[in-house]
Image (tube, rainbow, N blue to C red; front, side, top):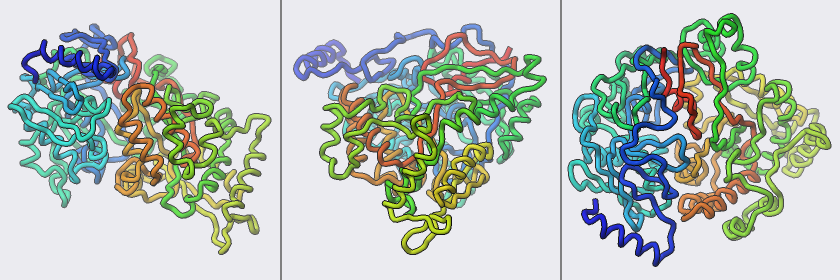
Length: 602
């Protein structure tokens, strides 16, 4: 940390005048991208918490599938829901009513160097792990080293890629040095989960033989694991000695004394279990469940509640993702043709109660979605790759196929036949075949049987093109393993986007991620243009250049036809027991499980 604060500030403002750069947030209690923080040092609580919240009681939740390990930071196997939010903590936590701000949790003070090449964290002297041991800078250094190693899930290696090294300045102070600074890297550093070096020295982080995989971990969070029925349930109990309970960043949160998570194999069974009172809360993804299945006596009596909660999240994209490692899907024309078989308008009206909006971008519902034709800033990024990119990137706006008049499903399928013929596929005796007579066939893999009714009309339309397509639902744990190993033809997936896209794009789209099992680049995109545009996003120096880079990437991904675009909602659909209460003030940018952390039981 700088000891001469006035001299530091003077030097900083001098640099501003010389280099005319946008200001960076230097407030010691928090960091932001745009230089603004809503909450002052020593603030009482976040505005979306409630001073009326009561503590105590039990919250029962559910999840699908199973679990066979207790470390959420490794690749192999499934960990139970809740470990990362209830047991483990990060250096800083986000504000849910600001798009680009974090406030110190384990880190009491944070300071970004004037040249943006490092960030220094001073740890809160109160910070303790649940075994009572002090959290030290050496624990933080160990955490970064471990998560960037091949022992951890590959996501962390990509996400923390530009944090070059950690320097322990003293027992409570650590500095992260950046290999190449970017506008959000100091905030990414604040998102580092802090692990106990003592615990993971005594217990293997990623046991090769699986022995010890179910050992209950030590973290610093508000809960400890108090009971485990492997694969069936896990119970979290409030840590009576939780070190951060009186901090502004934690006040009004984690109000339940006990949280139990039960596991179900079948989503239909879980719906009935919720209606029977076996658990208290659920996020509803399926329109039919929301409108038809979640009805009955307990809803009529008011024992159960259904309510939508609006948000301003960047919707990203959901879609049917091609695995382009499969030779069937390596031709862009083929991918475009198959996408024309999805009749969104019919599905939305007939199955979804007209509730959804079609994804029209990889950054849907945000400022980063490409608009019209590319502007000058976008063209500057795209032109070096013009000969590698489809002409549509430059001369057509983003527009999903439609069956609304004057368009129609028939005309879309006719165009699809033409595209398939251009790619060397023709129909013989009702079957789509290549020159060697090989049948065009593939499988759509699902983890939720309720999605089969959505896939069925898509498959029927593909059959009209001569495509032999099957779909099946498998066990969620097996599904997860197959996704991690890229063992599928097509799956339903989503790519969530933040209010400031950045390092996570490496894991989504880049060539490096395409070859790394467990990455989010399940599509298998391997493109120099995409890699360059991801770098342009990560290293954008201001909001304008970030927006241009996102929009340019949006166009390249869209006209690569890597997914068949699906749909999104601008609100969360939540069903819950009437005894649960939530603050009156909603956050702006939040997931449903983040919101649940502020609820309580009367």
